[in-house]
Image (cartoon, one colour):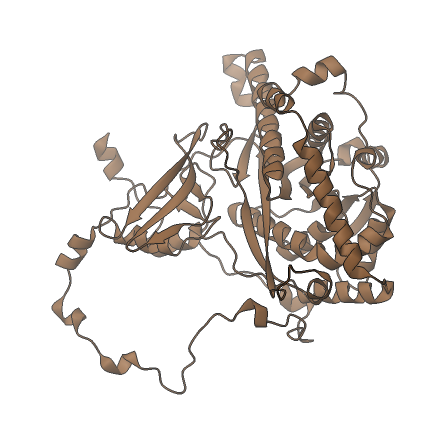
Length: 502
């Protein structure tokens, strides 16, 4: 067995390993087209007292958060252990749930305040999530997309930025007529739009679309499940969304303990439901006919989890969430309030998410299999004395050279950089091919910001503990420069949300 392991050819080099592990985004700048659309929409509305309206909208979100806190812990635990048990007794499983009856009602005032204050941040979180889905699934290019709880179209803008050429049809589900009008106003000057249709509920969508055409390559529900106070209705809606999913389902919620709890519950339910279906299907088939099982049967987590087991953060007091920094737009700087201090030029949007894909998790070799690393002492022993000579001329930068630096986001002016030269065609240029992390269980996820202490880096990593990815653990990993300078160099450059190879 040892001889077989030694013969494994490494899949990555040191450089490609670092590139594949990078998933986080630096300070994100909202696209020019979206900033212009928001400014134009707000000018057309001419709403007075915008700061007060933004404040009232923020208070309404706080009320939703308080309502979620009042949900009984026993009901949550019961749904995770056996999601169908409580529904069978209440006969709720086959109800025709209507999102519009249980969500938050948005009027004209709330819609304008949402566009001015929240839309850029929601867009940034959706863009970050969908960008990772694109990196982890390089062959995935959705043609037909369903956006549930579309609001003013933040997720639709993100989908168009991530997959600008493949998108052919967008179905939007949004019960608020005011939100629908705002979304249509924001996209009215865009070119090459896919065929877009809005519906007020999932029932309306399934009623107007033939059964053979209800499948969507990508289904996304962003910042909407938390507005539904009933756990049973959430389960019902997520199951309906999964039935409409042909390939990938993405759920995004605010990065709060309540949002993380919702994502964890939905994750447990989808995986439990699909495992149950697979067991029943395998039991019904003979051993000789098991090869006839549909390869799309089952489900696995594309991101952020590297495994499909129980979440190791359950009942630990911690919660899984991530953060995306974005440069504030003109409307956000104008209408958002600060607590006695000048408003920063950027904000950090915290979010939780999960992305499912139909099928079974691919079994891949782990990224570090076959790779050998030297200790710092071994590297020093191999040094050439000539390499230690210092060329003092290289220590000074000539006047013609530019020194790279990071500009303070607060000093940015996102509206000044709106160059007219930016066009749809230029923005849709192809990306350079970079090494990608596979979907195997050998990549862990860095949760929370790594701590750098001298020549050591400490990271909290969620990882799989077997090659099948059926179980996971949450570990604190310490990487020192003396034992592994190569991985220490990568650890020092890793950020919250990046992958970590095993």
